[in-house]
Image 1 (cartoon, rainbow, N blue to C red):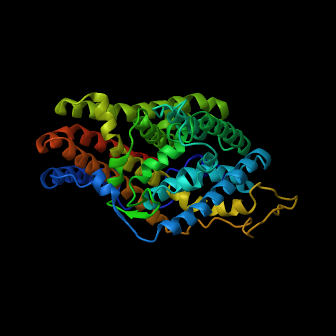
Image 2: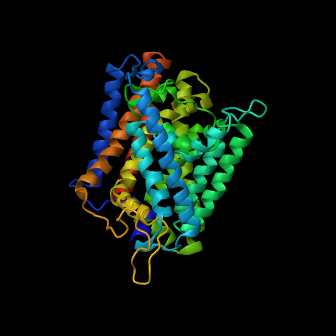
Image 3: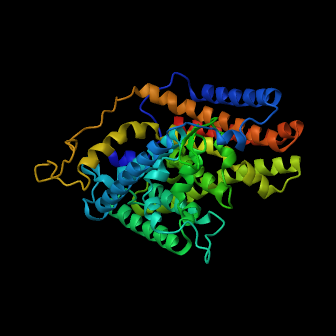
Length: 441
């Protein structure tokens, strides 16, 4: 059961009283009405970089510095435990699985994005490579870091391949080897280019920092807590070449995770197992990323024709508007996984190497939780199902809202409304597709 959950988080054990078509029409109506209301009432930008600077909360800098030290210790400890469990722990699935799969696929890939949109860039303090990076300078003046994020795109695609296409993607040993390779790339890059390398190549850090731009809290240069308007942080995103594809790669990957569990997909490829499933799953993953990218580029092309702006510049300009959608897809597709398997993370942390004796008793039980069982009803399943469905609609409304605010800040009021018409259509397609994947998963 756990092996399946770690591989695919889409779907819900709860039920919704509305059929798919009613939810779809409700989503379309919400998006269209939001667009119309914004065009009529939202005539001045409200989510600018000025708003993103926010208001500092006095007396918080010292507390947050201490908290950062604690987070660094926790992050490094879990990293070392996870890589140790992957390399030297039991290499089996099921209920005796060791720490590595749940740590990577649930705690890292699901819990951190959800937390980032609420509490800001928590991963910056937890990220072990940020801590290791303290040994290196910020910049290497003799060899500056590349001014693009294509390495980060490759990293995220490799992770998605491991999760969704590799036949042994949940194997602790495979994950352990992957962590070693990733560590070599990150530490070697910092040795060559300085800590700036992480902002170019650490796909997870890039993604989580982008999602954190949604949050209404952040830290200023003095380390103090800052309160700001939600979404305003998107105006501060540094959109280097490749940033849009970071977002679109994750959007397409999450979509494929849902699509691969649908009856249509199994009707197309059957139910191959092992390496026989790798090629069709890889092709499906690439196609879903390509579809997400093509739809977005079509919307950007239409916007550029209205505004007279270069197509590539337009695509980069509006890339941050996709971030609420990525976050919404994460909540929609993995909410049930998060609720259920973060409990398992605590149990596995108590026995990280997954060691059990001949009688099935854990040989390690640090916190007395190694024999714990997941409470599948910790949160009402119907409530989780509603959260999943509503999050998709809300995520797309937030995307439309930020895109409109950005358009108003860059173009005349008339151009702003016209420029977003095609992008609205793209958002509707994303929303309906996301709901369909959720209902079909």
